[in-house]
Length: 245
Image 1 (tube, rainbow, N blue to C red):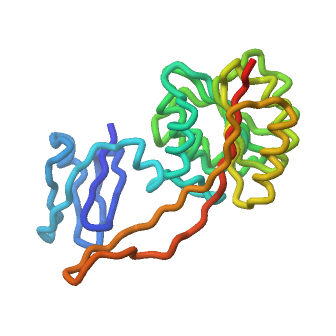
Image 2 (image 1 turned 135 degrees about the vertical axis):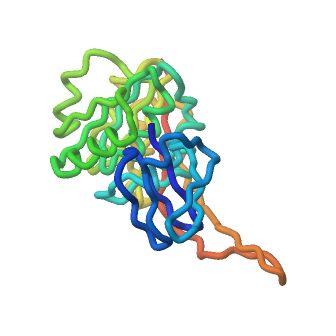
């Protein structure tokens, strides 16, 4: 069982119910949480209240330890919605990094499986810790080069996601590994690389090819009026292709 304690902008993930949690607002006796439920309030020794929330997949982005820059939730949501990936599906994720995308996909496809491949051992170690923290047991992480590792796969996939160098080179192999009707989704921070991916998909008879960028604009609401509170920040381009036969 895991809880998230929230007060203002402060968030704490609780998975042990003994000892003390020291915050800017005072000390919380963690044993007091054993008999509480999401929605309840716990009070510090200074009388400050923290709300108890259930730990959910939306909290991955807050609490995962990071290595490389992770794919943002808005882009993860687009991949899930655009491909229709769902319970029971099998996913290959190349370029694990922090493990953010793999974790969200594992939660969506369970009891299906996610195989995720990361070249760097230091990144893979962090991702494994993140998966354990999230309580995900349907992710199999392989450390190696996807251009070599893929030869050992015995089954095909409903979805393949690529966030890695050499993505263009892997597109023909991705098509071979997909089930008919399955999708490949490729994330790239640079438009030239996204263009090359799309051209490679066209050369290998993918259908329903699309490439787009999603922008997020945060809002602020004041007495005088409402307006965007930040600039418009670019994250990346997502190219999709589908195996037609």
